[in-house]
Each structure stands twice: as C-alpha cells, then as structure tokens.
Amino acid sequence: MSDFAFSRRHFLLGASALALTGCVSTGETKRPAAELAANKVKPVTPAMYYAVWDEGYQIPEVDVSKIPEKFWRAEVDYMTDEKPGTVVVDTPNKYLYHIKPGGRATRYGIGVGKDGYAWSGRAKIAYKRKWPRWTPPDEMVARNPALEPYSIANGGMGPGLNNPLGARAHYIHKDGRDTIYRIHGSPEYWTIGKSVSSGCIRMVNQDVMHLYDNVRDGSDIVVIPDLSKTGQAHSVMAGA
Image 1 (cartoon, helix red, strand yellow):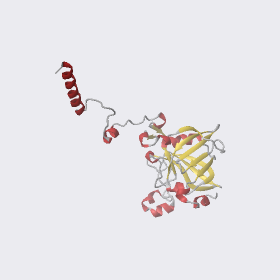
Image 2 (cartoon, rainbow, N blue to C red):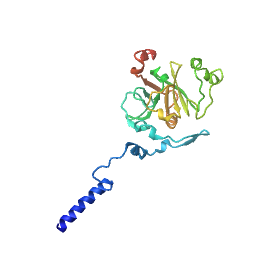
Image 3 (cartoon, one colour):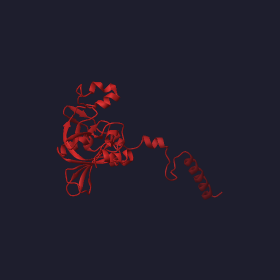
Image 4 (cartoon, rainbow, N blue to C red):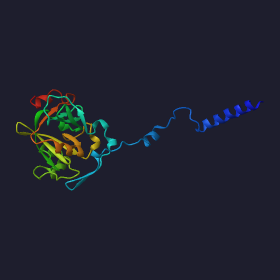
C-alpha cells in the first residue's frame, strides 16, 4: 500500500471517529430545545423601565422579557384628526396613544380588563391621582364579600404597591358624570397586551407615571371599542 493510500485511509477513519464524538462540525449544530431556552439571552431593560422610588414607594424594575417589545413605550408616527393632547385607547389592539403635534404620538401597551370592555366613546379625563385609593363598587363587593373591608363605606384600600390601581389613576367622566372607567397602573406588568380578568385599562406603573406627567386634566379621551368582545351593545352603551 502506498504512503498516500495509507494516509488517506487513516484520515478518513479518524474524521469519522471525530464526527461520532461531536468534535467535527458538519454544518449547523442542532441543540435540544430545552438547552436553547435555557441559554436564551434576555432583552436589555431600557432605562425607562428601571426600578424607581416614587412618593416613598419603590417600584421594581420591569422584567421586559415578559412583555412583547411591541408593547414597550415608544414614540411613533400616528396620523389622526384628533388634536394634540388627546388620549386614544385602542382597545382591540391593546394600545394607548397620547397624541402629539406633527403626526406623532407616544404609544403605550395596555392590558384590558372586563370593565375596560364595558364603555367606549368620547369623554374627558376629569382628573388624575398619584397613588390612589381603591374603592370597589358596591356591586363588586356584593359579588365578592371578601372585598367588604375595602368598600366605599369603609374608605377603600389605601395606596401601595399591591393596590389594584397602581401608582397612578386617570378618572374618566362623560357629560360631567363618572363613567367608572379608569386608566391606571398595575404591578402585573406581564398582563400587558392581554385581556385580563378585572379592571379597566391597566398599564405598567412606569408607563402610567409617564402618561400622568404628560396628560392634562380635562383632556379629551377617545375609546375605540372591541366589538368582538361586546358586540353592538358596546357602542349603544357609549351613546355613540
């Protein structure tokens, strides 16, 4: 056997053995799904979602890996006939827009509770509150007696990180009357972009604080209904 044939034979045998031991790349390496998930790189948290002290409360950093990036706060193009300063709640798409001049808007992701589907139309942000008290309506207390300590008669639940209204609340009135519709914060940031079991329009606490600082009392608000959830009765209730 020639030296060339001998060398070539040993090279092929060696390469085969190495391939069996996984030491030779034969193309894209296939890795188990569990290993890929374990090694998945988490997105970098933007500064707007860092932990923050506010009014004596420490709001924790948002784990942005639990919120699709499309629902992170962003400045976007948004063509509309609504005047700057107007708030538009796009219920079906789970977005809230604060209209700015020049065809721009600040867009926030929202979670929509069942009460958030119960009203739509045009109204006013009558007023807003930092770290509000939560007073469940008497009808809610009747359905869930465990809420009795937080009833209107008992003064509601005090402010805090576990309060369902979060760090800020915006109160919506139509024709001078309270609609019971609220835009508020929530510590449950992983529910943003989803339909949730309770509440109206919830936002990441850091986002609702940003909205609070930029929206004015008396601003117009337009709530777009999700007819797939409520049908035509939704617009009738809104007086549209």
